[in-house]
Image (cartoon, rainbow, N blue to C red):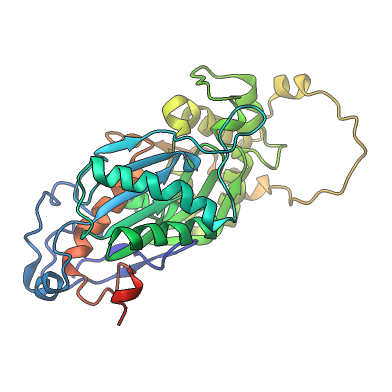
Length: 375
């Protein structure tokens, strides 16, 4: 029986484990990764195990909702599709930062509810989405618990019967079709790196740094050309908050026998790749240079001497000697034909397209049911 990697758990860090579906699973390729050609459409094809699913009331494909763009963008569509049907851009909030950019609440459930409730109601009404459908919510790794509690309450009040949370870094490999590699997700505010091996998300390799797209472009502008700020925030190996440092630490945390496979499949994705498509090319070139022992004399000459008092370092330096053998294996994989900011949504869509037919006992999609429907 073929096996496919399936995310487990609800919000937060959730590893991906191998699972074996029911008796009639013709939607999987023999290699274990979802085949986009075989997941076509419709609610039929559930096989003999679909009877209790229909009786449970969720034979229709669930809604896939991705909370992207650092919380300022919603992508909405139905499972079994290969792109979100609608992308709802930035929405206004009552508070603004000093530079004019909109801020979102952190730990205030009521403030989150005041933002989410009218937004979700408007989306469901305009798109004429039936509230009897279940919802799979794809979220960033750093969303606060108050947001999760608020969005649950919003959907319960709307009449949604069940909700499942999926981490975007965990679900991306399902849309790409590879078994070993590293997901490098660069969003609006933060960047996240994590290695995946044979359907397992290696949570101990997870790295997060505050070097999203907003760190290199001030305000709400868009910068498509490569700038010095991008060099400092993304490619400066001496900066412990840079993207290249996070990639190196993620690679260093991987077991030795899988490092070559991981570094050979670097997947750059996220909202930053839409505005700056050369990020993957520049980052892989810089990574190969560092592993070969080459330095960047231009960047070192331009760096101004620090006038602050010396302080204790809180980061462990990267062991380049142990990674030098990987210099010739560095390679980035394109997300084409998918957009780099849609790969997480598509991964959740394909995952749900398989399991909402087969998951009779709710064993693989960890649904969270409305309070009045809990057994």
